[in-house]
Image (cartoon, rainbow, N blue to C red; front, side, top):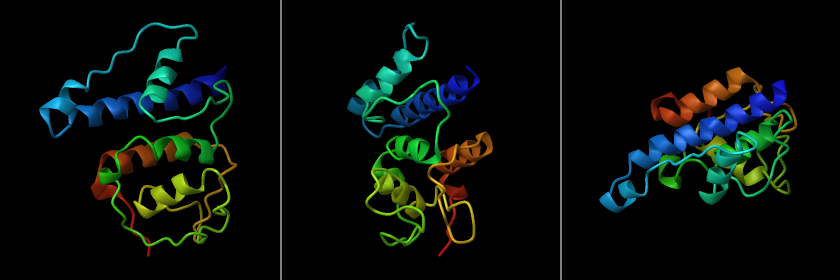
Length: 156
């Protein structure tokens, strides 16, 4: 149950970020589309999952009662912000992240976040450790980098 709460906090954070960025819409038409409507559901988090699916944040079902891996988390959060909010700060060539081969389904999402300065890896070689469970402190840093572009990291 504790792992389910940890992973669901991820889904709730997605909904929160989407609500913030939707209200920052540049046009009146987009602003009208910004209402975040969440209803009661069973299980309790299902409405958040449905919201994330409807808005293209997630494209598959996850094991909601399991811990979130770094690859799973980064795969979801790479879809939260529009491309215009993730300008390239770092030149990271395809295949440059040692433990993220481009053949992996999550590779594009991870490279997108590395290039935008949202993440820079877990060590000096910029390994991602995609199969490891993500920690709360890592989530906090990633959310900070996503919400405040001045905190993003340039590493090359």
